[in-house]
Image (cartoon, rainbow, N blue to C red; front, top):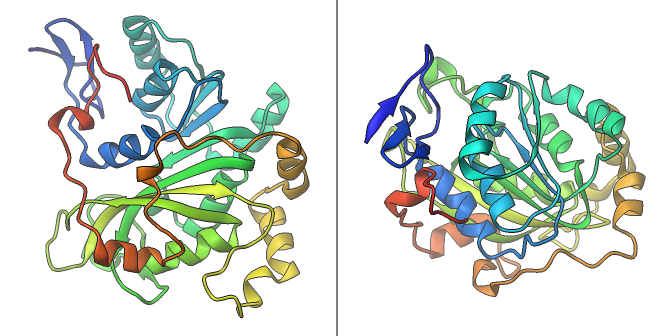
Amino acid sequence: MEKTSRSRPWYYAIELAPGEETDGQVHGNLALSRSLLRGVNLNGQACLDLGSMEGVMPTLMCRAGARPVVSYDRLDLSERIERVRKAYGVSFDYIGGLQLAELPAELDRRGKRFFDVVNFSGVMYHAINPLGLLGLARGFCRTGGLFLVETAVKHTESPDLYFNAGGKLYEGSTYFVPSISFLDYALRMLRLEPLGCRYLRNVLRLGTGVTRAAVLCRSLTRPCPLDPGDDWIGKPWIRADFQTESHIDWKGMTDNGQGRPEVPIADPRICNVDARSLYHVMSSTERYVVQPWEGKLGLDQRM
């Protein structure tokens, strides 16, 4: 295929026309998010994609029947987004050039903060405050909705957050790599029940135990600890702190989901957690084998 290029390379490899493809890359971690969302009935669901870059996931959400779809990125890639929307004949709202902390106010201004499905892929490990940012992203998912997080993780049983000193764990603008157990506990503390998990083999630096994992969660009204005796996970200051520091509107999230059905799982095979820890799920299941088409966007593709 002929390559098209601007002054800055594209992030994703995207087919814009027959024989014309952007100069982006194929990303295996995109396949993890796609594999989980293929098992969700997105038809008619309001979806938010955080960290969209050039809009691959919003495009796929639209093709799955999601309405409305909102795409966000801290970079303003409006020109590229418009080219993708035109090439694929899809319509979604785009918010670019804002920090994620500014997004709650912007969505409130537009009259819609809470969504049925939220995708938070490829962002958390870039944050200097990963727990706070996870909370902020979680705050967009209404009760009964589905929240998907994909990130670099370290496959260890202790709930640790590893500082990427010297870039020895992961390359690029990565400050912290969470262990899969840290991610598990943080999700449950934030009232997100893990349903399905997919992961890749160790990437970039073999021997570090670092890989990429995606977790699909159900948004609940209360924490869901693995240990029934864990009463710390639901202490009132946790709710208050995340409301203050991560802008979570717990009441609004619950009110928005009240009386509405849960977002349906169309393919129960994606739900492989079964009340186990994510560490044990990763320890006992095979890594996800990426198909070449899943890491890019083609004109004939669906989720």
